[in-house]
Image 1 (cartoon, rainbow, N blue to C red):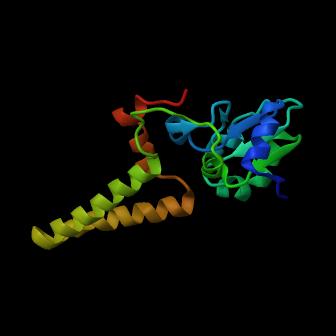
Image 2 (image 1 turned 90 degrees about the vertical axis):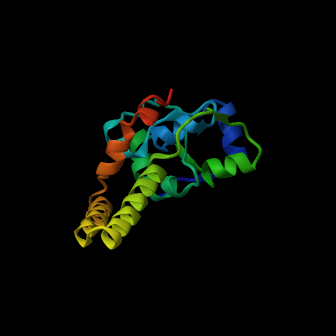
Length: 174
């Protein structure tokens, strides 16, 4: 099942007529920049989040449109009524010159933080193993194993850890 797709301008018109806009990006993404009237309902918590939309028409969006299209069936079931997807997501929304709100000082996206931390640990483990003690290559191996586990299970221990770092915990979506 796929949801009908709207251009950003069509979605903007529909929202102006009373449709509910739901942003399925993670809360750290939503905190950094959002469409002013959007409600955040992260896709990762969609099963545990009740979307109380009543009879309202719902328009879903993410950053690029990929998450909304890939999860159209779940999104449609979550609302039960009329729902649409913004074609191209927030990227297309901004390209169309439609308004967004940005919060300065927001940390970079959590998954980018994970990539930076994991990459640093792999390179660090390699350098330490090559220069100090070959047993330190285990650092790179453990990070690689963690990434494989995350990919297979969808659970990322490093992301869960980084989520509680002061720079992330202090900046919640509002």
